[in-house]
Image (tube, rainbow, N blue to C red; front, side, top):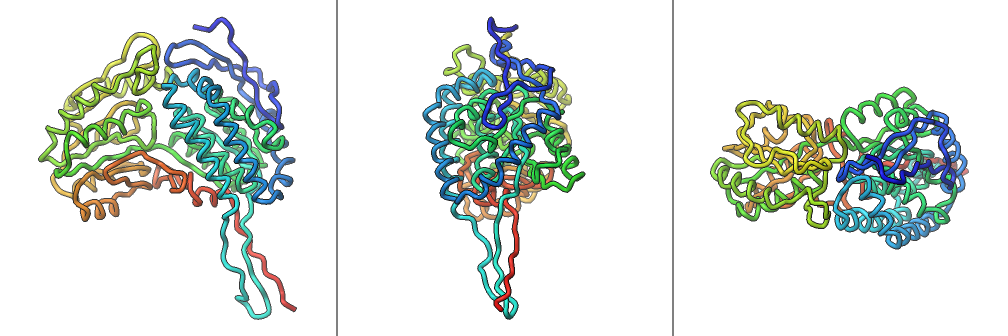
Length: 479
């Protein structure tokens, strides 16, 4: 179904919106209604090359600005984001169906705050102290921008993930060619519009398209680094492509986060929190709780409480303010989640949920699955939907073993009232983030990134900023 007026989106290159050279078009569908709200071009290698040339030409002037000048530009951008919040919310809502209040608070307002953090970070880069490490010479370290960076963002948090990419890259003096997801490009284009007159032309460039466009960014000889937030499959493709020309890669990929729940917790309070952190954004969050590992002494009570809490997390209403979460993002992903739930092994039990909500849009009800085995696909593979599994354990060692026995290693949490237990388990969990008696919360000052198949490199924090720099040693004779 197509709306009465379906706009055709454009790329943003060298400070202007431009028609692409590629002629193929993609339908942009609102997953809450199934309505086609826009069409986006599949940018060709020629379109990517045009953007790369603009970014390359803009690099030296931008990199040679003082950190305070770049900071000022980013602070102005943050103010402009807040001033244009309504437009950003509507642009994203058209593409995701997320509740508007969630987009406003968790992406637009949070994004403006994070841009301000990166603006300050521009002035705080560190290196080894200068000194005479060889007699008659002085050595010091320069921390420099990489140059042009290629970036690819996902569809689950389109605006916020764009901020995570552009913030540290711009703060450190890089210029950018970014491809948003092919299903959710509009809030990123709105960000580009907002940046006009604040960022110099060519510093931020947006090319629309699908996987072939992303591959053209990775294959292009200009970028010194390519960064993606996306699936393991996409991350492997980026890493493989980058290796051909020895580009650096920055990968934030999938997750299968466990919540390890010990028998001393308040069951009702813990179940409510886990439901919040599992079903937020329809579970379309690589840090979301997807596996609940619970001590056998409270297993049945926690399953009952979780099932009750799941039923309270509403979705599917035409009035998005009534929804705790919105739809799954697109028909292919919706079909994949439905298939995974319908293909459960006979021993698995659906305690609650497991079905589509309504007949319009791609809504799926919160789902709790018990009696699963560690080897089951639903335990081992990323579902990326409002679906959680529950397994029981008897000892701390068993809990840690079950938690770590997946290929993903992005996020995890431990739930207990015992301090020593929390310290031991947080030490032993093999994940890039461990929360204690909470989950999913992120702050600009702390790093976010995983191990193993969840990728490498950090977003947020000074660690994320440093990922967009290179180190140069300079030695000078004193004679």
